[in-house]
Length: 193
Image 1 (cartoon, rainbow, N blue to C red):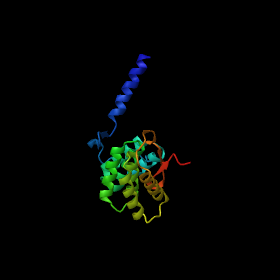
Image 2 (image 1 turned 90 degrees about the horizontal axis):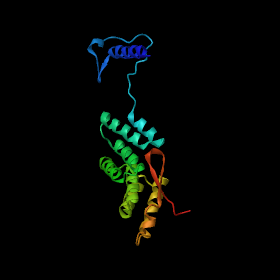
Image 3 (image 1 turned 180 degrees about the horizontal axis):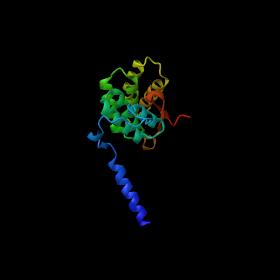
Image 4 (image 1 turned 90 degrees about the vertical axis):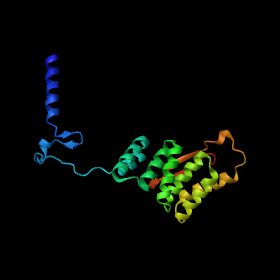
């Protein structure tokens, strides 16, 4: 049995010595060498934004954040990445991070209703109902009232502002979140039947 282990170890060392990569670059000894016929060569890398979006749909928010960071490393931190990172952080309950990402997104692209809507959801979750109402109104105006999700979020913010006298501790977490298509989130008032 011990001899078998030594043979496998020697084989592993031999195979490792034949690998043409050294870190992230090709070994100079293999420069210009074509792969054997029939070898599948991958030349295009996977779009990490697509990977992150699919992970979000699967509920794998931590992994989605990692994919979005990889996308940012290759293409820069644009508004779409900030919105995606904000949405994933929101889904994980990391409200401070989500707010930072979404505020960065609305600074970059102030005409994007999805970014304003998601920022409004974060503000509602934090109990900032007045600012959330203003943010939802802006999202609603930018969207020209086409999105039912934004309209419903605005309605909830207005209702919360009108009923706000003294917040009761048992009502702090009465809102649920429902993910909608296109990276939008809908607030659900769980006290309404």
